[in-house]
Image 1 (cartoon, rainbow, N blue to C red):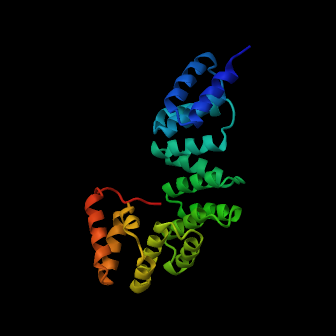
Image 2: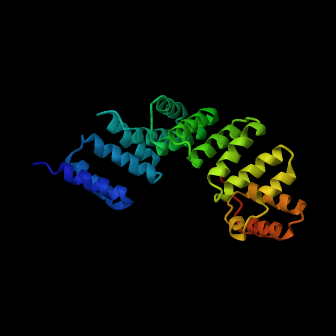
Image 3: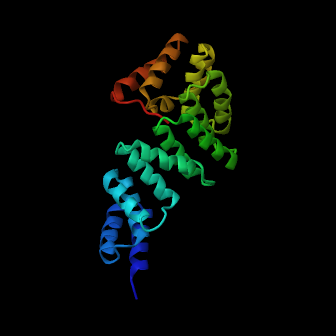
Length: 249
């Protein structure tokens, strides 16, 4: 009897547990014995993608696809490999195909939205997030995705503001949502309302910020409002934060 189910399942178990090195070793041994196992090739491609080995991941996923259609997770990994390798047309084709599927997994939809946004397809990314909202109206992550991607697409701040207010109502403990609202209120030339949105920010919340643009904006907001203590905390955070590309969502 073939030991294929045992070895493949063992590799899958290692992968699900986050033991990527062990998963890779088991997969290599298994593929030497079963070189035409599409599930093993797909898992290898997904694993390589997770390790940012995009070229090897692409090759493995294309090998798997030559035997049978990829799973949605496999297609997402392949599209992202294409994108990182500069194969934009192929990446777009896979993402557009996925956007037409009746996906009902919020995490998969979130990954799809991020991929579309990486290609600059912000409106379509917002639409995907809106589908996630319909699946779970209480998902603040999905609602924030709608606001974030519509803002990236250039929709007016007046349109984004009520979405963010709803997001904050769903998850008032997430400080960055209030910071995002500050950005919108600044665009609407409402500095006083912007300050009120973060006037009670704790030291820990301010020190948790990663986006230098956001931190600089808060320095200005706090300074203009006469809140020198919080402005000083933000200035200190700017000194601590390395000069790199500002984080996105």
